[in-house]
Amino acid sequence: MSAWNRLFGLYGPLLALFYFAGIFKTQLDLPIDLTVLLAAALSLLIVRRIAKNPLFPRAVAWAGVLWGCMALGFLAADEGYGTQKAISFFSLTLLGAVAPALLLRDADGVRRFANSLLLIGLIVAASAANSLGSLGVYDRLTVFDANTIALARAVGAGLTALTALWLLRRFPAWAALPLMAAMAFIMIASGSRGPLAGVVFAALPVMLYSLRHLRGVARLALLIAAAVSASAVALPFLPEQSRARIETFLGGELDKSASIRAEALQYSWAVIQEHPWGIGMGNFQYAVALSPTPVPILYPHNILAEVALESGWLPSTVLVFLFVTAVLRCIRNYGRLPDVSRLVLSLLLFSTVNALVSGDLNDNRLFWGLLFLALSLDSVRTQLSAGQAAAPLASRSLLRSATDEPLAVYTAASGPAQTLLAGRPWCSDRDRCRIGSWRCARQRRWRGRK
Image 1 (cartoon, rainbow, N blue to C red):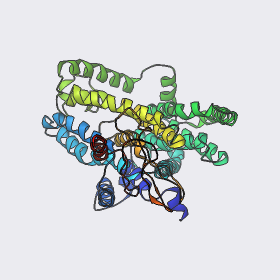
Image 2: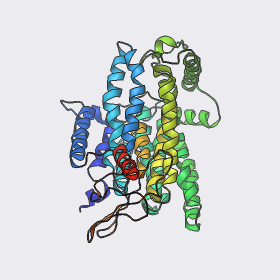
Image 3: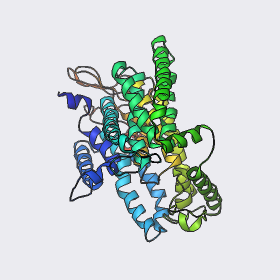
């Protein structure tokens, strides 16, 4: 296996590039939109995967439930922006939501995806660093003509992955600490506060895990010391406007941008209470009267408020339920997938913080992908060497593990086995079944009755 396949593979870079394709569009003169091109490639890979194994993780079914509930917002969508938003949401965003759950089926696949996010973040950070010298006094750092939030999100996702990988002892300190300092500087220079808060919040699961042993405590202390030292050294070199925005944020004050978003959230809540079935996608600008702004505000910059406002109470309730379930699913897999579950949880928390403070439904495709990847963790296989028994867990419900169920295994030496634990029979299809699908659960119940 080549070094590229071992570190990144095929699925990881395609998924990472799909989520951050908007940054690179202006630099690539392609006859086809880059996002559409990557979506076509991912679709072909998913079809290939389904052809080899037609069984789905249960997370895909939950995606269908959520998107079906949000069809209420599609039916009443605005003819302009709302229709374009709905079409993109029910095509590209839906693909981005289910693709990780369908393609990342083992622990190494999830790690390669995190490595790919880190690679994208490093590329974007290095490109942005080249333009530091040309910034004016009142400029904020950006890259490839993209907005500052897109820059901070791409670098922040990579920084979150790097921090988690290093604290989980899967990245050397001599390389991790300088890279983290450089990426944090680029994020602060962009002046985007949401991604910066997301990185800090996302580090909590792995930071708590590091406190279990003395070496982890030392790593955590080294990380805090490096962060404080790097901030003190880099502060004089930051763009003036970016530094002012960060200082205002740390001081607990709201500038004009934050005030408008807080106002949008406040008025959205009043409209949500009056419209339990939603007002339709793209109608936020007509239903909510905000203070005049140079650029019209088309959405409330909060994914939960956006879902509840445009599609109604039902899909917003489903979304909250799925998020809580995803977090519990990550915590429940701490024992079986100690590093992967914490890595996914960290990335999910980072994308959630971003989704709650900026962007619309389609800007937060990374959040959707990580949400359903976390929901499918029970069916993610541990990476075992040849001759060992592959025993993926199954789940008969969203909130309860099925470790008491009989596990059929397949070994290279002995072939399909019957059961490992006493109980109902288990389908032993040479470990081809991605455990956790509704079809397998139904078959087990039927066989149990017989």
